[in-house]
Image 1 (tube, rainbow, N blue to C red):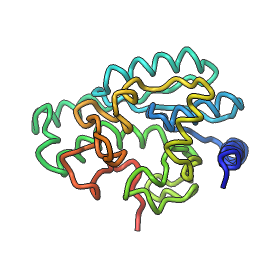
Image 2 (image 1 turned 90 degrees about the horizontal axis):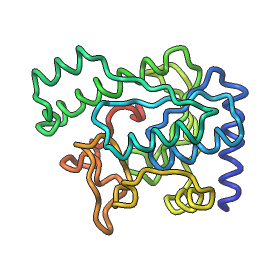
Image 3 (image 1 turned 30 degrees about the horizontal axis):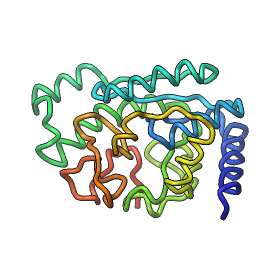
Image 4 (image 1 turned 45 degrees about the horizontal axis):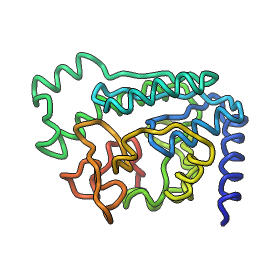
Length: 228
């Protein structure tokens, strides 16, 4: 499939979601893929609400991009969701500020408080949500399709860029002058919370910098787990 066909299919799917799955939301985590989708949603003036999750531990570069997106894509303002203060304080008191390094269980609990619970609030009452997932990103995503029913949240989940390659994502970003996170230029292909993200070396998997102390099979926060 040519890139032009992939782009056309992506735009067609986004338009279908906007027309047939209302209300629909797009979860923008400010990665390269999400900036492509932000641009397309704004460019085609689609009736899709954009939201993001501010975990309270994002890198400074991500906050800088958030501000740039707010100014450049003002037609689609991003609704920001934050973790519950009491739950966050409770976790830190029990496990310490960086307790997530100690075990997969503690790391996933931190992800639940800072990401999963806010996501559930963001998805309440929605019929569909859109993500920037791509199949080649990691072993945990190789079997994903462009649409599936999310049983946990009770709505349709769409991955319009599922077939795109990393090269195609970046060629499109550069050709359209789309803003992106400065950390990408410092060898951070996948960016999450500051303490849980590092740069990768030549030849490493694009997700190697996320939760680098864990095995690849556990490297998801719970936002994008395919059930069954």
